[in-house]
Amino acid sequence: MASKIDNTHPLYLSSSNVTSAVKIGIQLVGMENNTLWSRAMELTLLTKNELGFVDGSIKCEDYAVYSEMKQWDRCNAMVLSWLMNNRSKELISGILFRSNAALVRSDLKERFEKINMSRIFHLHKSIVTHTQGTSPVSVYYSKLKDLLDEFDSIVPPPSCNCEISKEYIDSMFRQKIL
Image 1 (cartoon, rainbow, N blue to C red):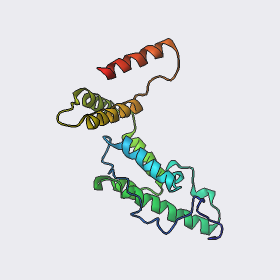
Image 2 (cartoon, rainbow, N blue to C red):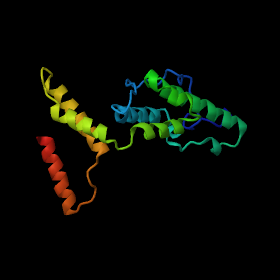
Image 3 (tube, rainbow, N blue to C red):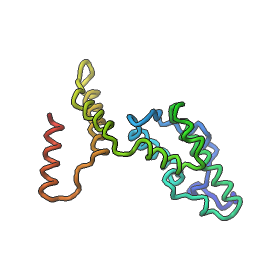
């Protein structure tokens, strides 16, 4: 089997792929940073060629040979360990009790990615009350931009080019300016 799996194969694990190899610098603590954490984790898993374990496109059923199924188990366990190492201790049980990384992602979506009015309210309040204070303009603007981007990802503007959509987008733009 080793001769069949090269570094582009989804079941390939290099010697540098150890449980502590993936540190994204953000611990998932809940709904308040799930969007940022998810995007950072997806980018990192993409660079490791392991995103398919999380999005469900690399399935154990696709590997009929016993040795490939065992290699899938190893890769899935590695991805699960990477997910565990980037979550708060309080959220680790959500990984330990799931059999594969795709189920972990599904669980996270169920918990945190629903359009949640309390998160929208929190973001709106944070945007409205955000002040520069003693922070440099670059820090102030970066934080404000991050809040606006997350708000837009949860409540995306309409995608059609009809007149009502244009009016809505203009109105949201004016709100952002204010």
